[in-house]
Image (tube, rainbow, N blue to C red; front, side):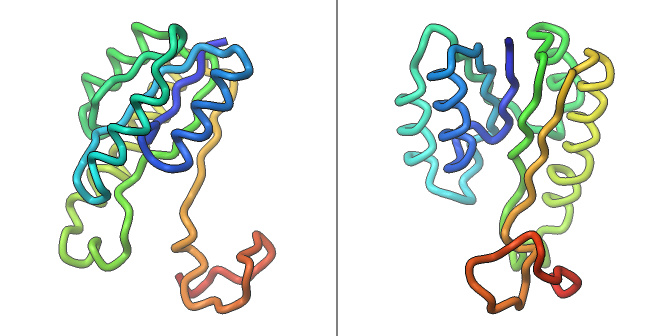
Length: 147
């Protein structure tokens, strides 16, 4: 099975990719390696993912043609979509970056899944949806109407 993991250089994406590889899956990792978080840390994670069944693509979700080409070339069976522009405060200063990545980019992933008849898509949000909630640990049962 071929699994596309977006945000593969991030903390969760790295661990998901590693678990899939350990399970024997072929993993296509995608990340734009932007500098919102430490790029050297991302590169270190990618180096740990060096494996015959791992292929990395530095690509931005907003690159429609690039995403279309990636789906066409690899025909993933499943997609784990973890990539997004993080940081709520950053979105106030850079709203276009958020729209390009988190809305337009997500549309490109959805369209790629549709075009390639992807069997399953997993999409994960961030803890930011829990907003001012002070109950720990966060739970899917907590109210998220004040992100």
